[in-house]
Amino acid sequence: MGLLDLLRGNPIIAAVREPQVLDYALRQDVGAIFMLCGEISDLRKYVARCEAASKPVFIHLELVSGLSSDQAGMKYLAGEVKPDGIITTKVHQVALAMKERLLAIQRLFMLDTLALRTGVSTAKAAKPDAVEVLPAVVPKAIATVAAELSCPVIAGGLIGSMEDIKAALAAGAVAVSLSKRELWGVQVPGWRRGMGAAGIKP
Image 1 (cartoon, rainbow, N blue to C red):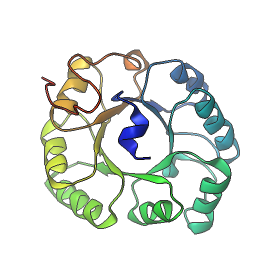
Image 2 (cartoon, rainbow, N blue to C red):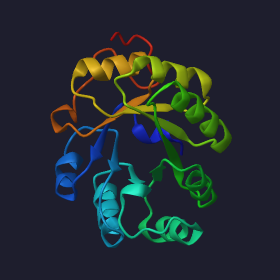
Image 3 (cartoon, one colour):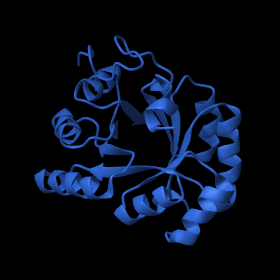
Image 4 (tube, one colour):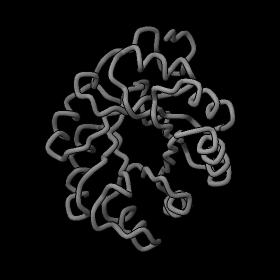
């Protein structure tokens, strides 16, 4: 099953930065959970809660304490923790995840033109299931990445309003990840499953 299927028609992804917020996120109408925190010993518990709530969950590898960045670590994650996928800034982790049949989202930080070009180039080589572009409040960067890559683009970072969400979707993102709890569960006017960004006006 691909990432777009997992989102089930909901472009809002709850980015959970504190474990104690997870249960709140699971009660919201969101398409998926991005776990941006935690320790390796607690990951299975978090994933089980997400499974019970029928929410796809992705673990950000660089933000979890105690998880090895080698093949053994990825095997453990896939075999014991069993999230739907991972998020990473590292190209080699994308390859390791795909080898273990985990969905892989590559995070790209668009700090300047060079970072944008480098990010697109590495994503083309790594072929992740999706890329996450940060910050989400730079629609031009989102549009450039979406035009260059054939995989879905998720926008994340600095989203503070419905206007930011709509602008990111209008620029070509298929979903947005955000940690602002007030925006988890919002309905995006003009958005429906299978439509992507079509019809969304910033």
